[in-house]
Length: 206
Image 1 (cartoon, rainbow, N blue to C red):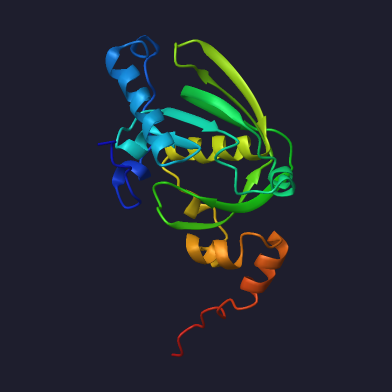
Image 2 (cartoon, rainbow, N blue to C red):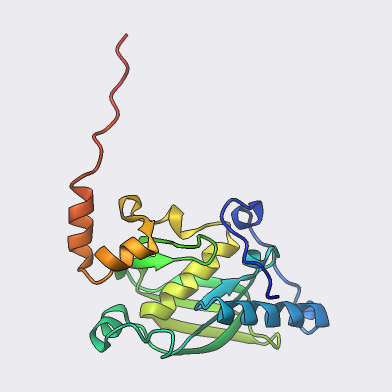
């Protein structure tokens, strides 16, 4: 049986993960963790996974995207999201930096908030440095959807979930989001859902 993906509510998802000693990367235990992460990500299927999602509080992420995973999107939708294939990447102790001021908002989900999604604003371009699966220094520059995946996974290492960044009134079950909202313009979705926002709370009368 593949490892169970830890779900929101578990404290490991709300704690800052610890850095991995470079000398430990080549150990059987650490390489086994990476294999379990990759296998679990692919089985889910997902495009990224962080070690805390397997209950391990270490700063390790994996990501991978393929044409198969984006098969439901039209060429236009792929272009709009900047979604392109990304090879399997393993990163230990990633350090992420936002590049420029451009931002993009799209529906985003998480394997640790199973069955739900919401609109989330992310930086359009990032640079991430760290150590690869062999313990060698690497730097990745990414834009579009790969940049979103990297931001999402590094958030996990800092105890953050996408629900901390989401436009809360767009939060919905995946079936409903897919049926009603996912193929509509972001501005239209935000406008329609925000129009029904509850009024601000009033102060109690003395």
